[in-house]
Image 1 (spheres, rainbow, N blue to C red):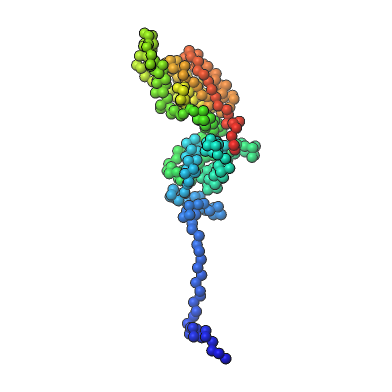
Image 2 (cartoon, rainbow, N blue to C red; image 1 turned 90 degrees about the vertical axis):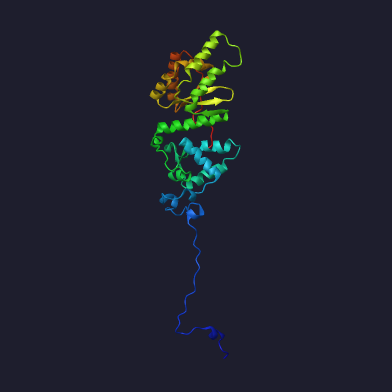
Length: 301
């Protein structure tokens, strides 16, 4: 019998043979690969409040969408698609996938405005605490009021107004700058021509009194028009704000309009009555406009 060649490589019987090592590939943690593990309900995005914002990676488009939602506090999914896809002449298929991805990563909360309607209900989106962390917002302001039906619907209508007017060439004017815009609007008519005595006196009066104190935000158009954004979600606050309009505002009426932001038809009628009363006090007439309601706007959901 030929010798067994394996005997030359055999170890002494007293020496135990160690087991062969098994090399196991350990997958990276969700935070290491920059994603969210859908099978792990205790992922860093959910369980650990101390995850560094760098661990939640966002694309440029995702960051833009989340920042815009954070600015308006709450928007409809259709308004997001209009802002970032429809307005850019792009298909909304990619937008729907991005919203679902943000929701799956728990960065965006999407809920139904009217759950009784089921799939026909408008879907509303707002940021989650993880989204605030990803954006670097360490101390987000509490927004418990947005759960209220009145405040929620007003903010959705306000976003609808900004989107619609922005497509028409209007730009946003914050409340702090409205007074200066109104003053410039009144003085503009006296420039570039010879003034008579009455016009000189009116111009000097406007310059001496300074800009009026305004309680509203505004919209500016390239044509020179200026609109005051008047909220119409609470009748008492709307009436008080209109009653506080200064009397000198009558000097700016030819280029000054009012944009109502109601939450419903009844609120719009009540705001228009309050506006008519303010016009009677000021002895002026403001052209009044209003955007279509967000619930009937032709938007993709």
